[in-house]
Image 1: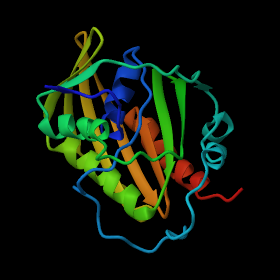
Image 2: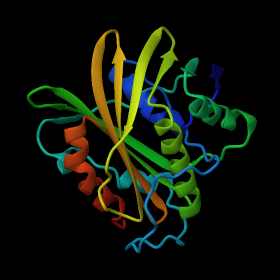
Image 3: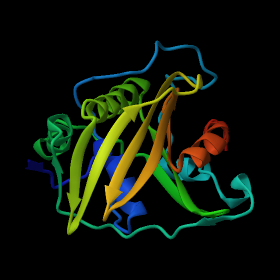
Length: 232
């Protein structure tokens, strides 16, 4: 078991899970050794050589309640907290967390995030994260993340007194953008099993990640990508 003082994108999906079980955390993505499950690059409408967008511009491109429709409420931004977290039973994720602490990782400092609660037939959640950097850094970083998580079909994550039993399974990603990644995370905390879907799309120098209830991710991914590409 190896602890990391700095949360990375490698644990971003895990912290989404922890958020759904009443634990929140600030996440920072890291760029480590490349392990990508993405298909070959293809042409896209967003030029990959353009300068990265500022965090302010990324915030303008996030989904909002009017984009999603009725029944969605924006969740307050969680305060930054330094969690003493640990990954148990997944060496690749343990190593990924440690890379940032040792200086081997590169953070994507240009980022924006929003989360929504949806009260339809049941209460569900969906969150969106946007990052901007060079196409190569985004591809390498997110490819490493998904590769590490998918290398461990089952493991545990602890944060404070919360222990989450995790399972990870690759799932088909839609043919959007330049590169695509998608996975299903099954988790159980306190005996309550749940499923979170996480889909990432790289379009040029922008990385779009939508996480949450599988149905909500599928319903809003196209909207998230289209707005992320929109110039302001």
